[in-house]
Image (cartoon, rainbow, N blue to C red; front, side, top):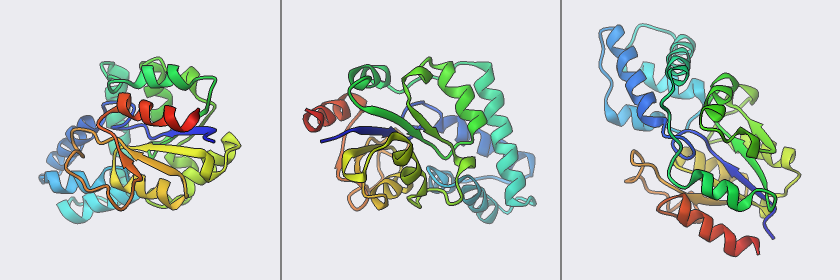
Amino acid sequence: MIRALIFDMDGLMIDTEHLYWDVGRELAGECGKTVSDQTLRKMMGRDRLASSRIFVEETGVPLPADEVMVRREEKMLERFRRGGIEPMPGLREILQRFAGRLRLGVATSSPRILVEAALPAIGVEEFFDAITAGDEITRGKPDPEIYQITMAKLGAKPDETVVLEDAPAGARAGKSARAYVIAVPSPLTANEDFSDVADVRAKDLFEAGELIDTMAR
């Protein structure tokens, strides 16, 4: 019996990945460098500092990774506060479908300050029973820690939990936490291979909701 449903945030609940790519290009440009799509894709879904290290190593920007991390997050917060971020198709429908039936959580690599700006901006913060942010853990995705902590907050065991992820690193984290993982790729991860890190792949949140409904009855 499924008791809990845990959502990643960026690229899964909210269409923010293109903003992260824009910020990455802007930050590289400020340092007289460029960043490839391959590097930006590799950064997706990972621990905040780990993704910043990838950025530094592959672009050669003359900044320490922790400063890159801070600058990226400041630029993202500025964009969130401007408004205009959009929920992914089917988000409100899947939340309404399982609110009151399952315990709902968020496990995101983004820091708490971005979560607290993003979820109210799309009007869904009231749906969640637990939120774990990337600056509240020791080891980020693909390590399972964030999902283990969120399951504990929700009072659910791994075999009672479904994880929804749009990036392979996050899906691997959910799988390593022994949850049932549904990959819901975003346009930026549509060509990624989830075969080793997810139990099933859904084309969108509408289809994911249908799959979960058969498990939660």
